[in-house]
Amino acid sequence: MAKIKNNFNDLGPKKWLPFQKSFTIFDTTESLIEENINFFIKLSSSPKPCIKGMGSPYFIEYFESYTEEMNLNNPDCSDSLDFLALDLTNITNSNKTTLEIICKQALKLNYRKFLWILLPTEKMGEDGFPTTWKISNQLSGFLTRKDEKIICLPNGKTMTSLYFRKDEFSKLKHFKENLNISSVRLKTSIPNWFILKPKPRSKEEILHPAKYPEELVRMYVKEFTNKEDTIFDPMSGTGTTQVESLIMGRQAYGIELSKLFHGIATKRCDEISTSQKHSIFLGDARNISNFDIPPIDYIITSPPYWDMLNMKGAEVQANRKAKGLQTNYSDNIKDLGNLDDYNEFLNVLIEIYKETTKKLKSNSHFTIIVKNIKKKGNHYPLAFDLTERLNKFLKLKHIGFWCQNDLQISPYGYKHTWVSNTFHHYCLTFIKI
Ligand SMILES: C[S@@+](CC[C@H](N)C(=O)[O-])C[C@H]1O[C@@H](n2cnc3c(N)ncnc32)[C@H](O)[C@@H]1O
Image (cartoon, rainbow, N blue to C red):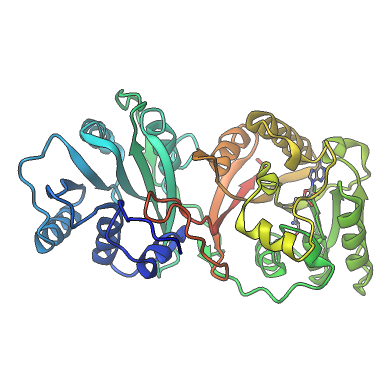
């Protein structure tokens, strides 16, 4: 690794790299606090950095005792913070005032310094939109939304760490809206986070740059369908949805735009010995109403993650290129992965999902596997944006995280700033009511 002076913190690569993973298996609150202070503060700097922890008495107590242990106390700097940590794990409706206090405190952050907020992922607002995401969206109006990290708890639940930075252009305004948090439980027997160990991909499957594992489909199909039900995927890729559905005795339909992947998907389905009906249509999912698709019992799908595969320089892309493998889905202009305007991409995707929902039976489920996206230093919360728009005709029922633990970590931003490696996918399950 090149010899660059570490101006960001005092960590060597052995500790820097693991922090860059966008999910963490929870150990103790104490270790979480220590990890974050050590990452976002240069302990050895002079004058001493000024840091502050707010939230539950336990959080504050440990935050302050660690600050003392590390000899970080700097009583002279209450108006110029170098790090602000906020524990909102016990958030309730009355926390609106807390949020106003946070905003006031966040304004005291020095430029380029971070705010860390710890929140429960599963708390919902009365509007059916997760409170954590709402806070993330609202704060992004006046601080720079930098990143997020999923904290995987041993009891199967998750918390979300949100990270914001105060920049020169940050608009200093106050948090206005009421939160109206309700304690609706998102109930299914699917865990809220999981790590899968997929079997190695075949020669043909590897041609596809972003296939999801059969093990993931199996888990969801088992939860949301019965034998002989009809399962559909409007963007089938190599046919993972259909292959696993057929093996499980379900009927399987789909659409795929790329001739290459359509061929692979169809061949994989034809090789399965089953009496169940199946068909994958070659074409554009925008035209779903033109295809002969029976009423659907369950949809599981994953869209292109906007135009991320067209981004040059991404590590995975470089590795694929070196092996002579295709790095994007296609050069077809109808391919959603080739739309470079985020809002246009979102509009088209929502329209496809809206048309697809018309074919879904009432009280049936729709699961979307998707990531929030970071591009050129900006954060595009695709999972949140999709949910907000889909909430008009579907209801969010469950948030799961598929955490990929088998990927190589890249040292993005090493010694300069924090950029995580996004290894978690949102698995959003909606119900049609
Ligand atoms: C994330 S991949 C799906 C991978 C699939 N779940 C699998 O496991 O193989 C998204 C797929 O959407 C397809 N796609 C992109 N635009 C499309 C469109 N307008 N209509 C149908 N499929 C499209 C791409 O060719 C790609 O195979």
